[in-house]
Amino acid sequence: MLVTAADTVYSPGDVGRFLEAWAASSADGAIAGRRLPGPAPPHRFGLRVEGGHVTRVFDEDPANGLAAAPLWVLGPQAASRLCLDDPPWELGNAFQRAIDDGTPVAGVEIGPTRDLTRPIDLIRENFTYLRGL
Image 1 (tube, rainbow, N blue to C red):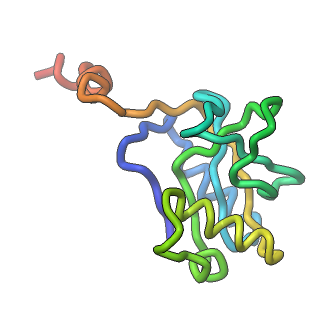
Image 2 (spheres, rainbow, N blue to C red):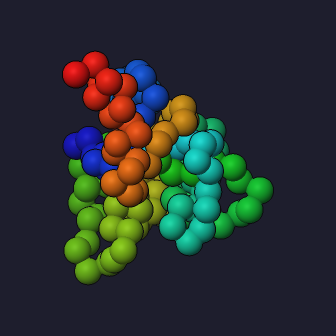
């Protein structure tokens, strides 16, 4: 299952490359990582990737410049660990449980993303389309 946030704009081609990298990895799931914007706790943690696999979903190491992007693939093992009573980062907790139990989760670095947090962000991202009207 592919999961993404509705308020994130990805660099062209990144979603397709992310899916291709996951399919080639034979891992049960995948989490995308990005350098821009980078980690900014408490709302955006680092993503620890070692040897192509995620080892820590919420990495608090300030030297780690790779942040998790809101782009995930959940296979059966990762999805089986979803638990609705574990807010606020249910997906992150499910992935970490799977990783801790030995399930391989691919870490795939993608390009910069843009978060559409405020209404003005939507206008800025869509301005080129609006100019054409």
